[in-house]
Image (cartoon, rainbow, N blue to C red; front, side, top):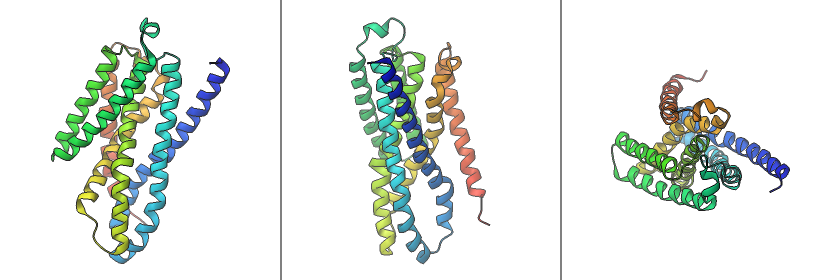
Length: 260
């Protein structure tokens, strides 16, 4: 590809990716740290009016923000890391088949979500289920590192791609279908299915916890002091842990914020 065209495409895709990401993650934080507490203050008749009017509008931007964040991210990643062979470390840039590895990554992420989804449905203890999912995430990361010979910069970005894919699929495969039924029930004046409410709420919280590490991976390509060092894997694990702690603190803060 013409280098100038490549640069322009990267610029436009990155711009679109960031804008779509702001729309998506902004709505995610609104749902978890503002709307969840606000809705608890409403009585039944008021909620019957507010909820069906507010949620479809907010969920529209939420789900399409997720979709376009994922699409532009995939296109940008394909352009830089596969077309440009930046995914691989050292000599493997010339010997590895980039398009084969892109297919492997996409299939792995799809299968990974199916497994993650099954775990979250089968294991009743949320902490245990989440821990199993994190172990599987680490296994995929190590697979890309040691079998795929992905470089440090690429590993960080692909960690973000994995998190972003799980988050986007949570939106489209779990949260949005559940919310449609919840909205319909409230609009009719009936109690929504408690299992649907719990499932949508859990995946939304998972997405919130994953979002802070995800944002770090999006900007990590500017910082070789992180991805280029010997302890890069430990550094990324520390970032993920720190991100989870920050989100937990923000959840606590959100519960204390009140209206005037």
